[in-house]
Image (cartoon, rainbow, N blue to C red; front, side, top):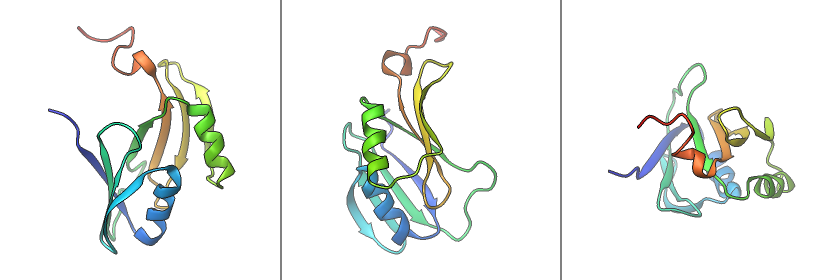
Length: 125
């Protein structure tokens, strides 16, 4: 089994689609105002958003996008006007992360983990 895609809720795809395109995702399905699907710039996973009136409460949805050149990528996004809540920094779980929110408040984490993504020192055998 392999993960194909993640779909997150959006109250307004007219704002969400340009945001995700600015992040570098390629729009491959445009069924506005209800649905849009993107191809990730690397790998084979895709990402989609669907229109909904009610979004999750509390912390909501968290989506992780791995970026090999995290610091450079975040700088490029900042230069394009993307606002971050947290700039790249090293975490105790051995990942380097930057955090931002999409127009709907979904938490996005851009990160680099390298070998530690699937094989951290505490991995269960």
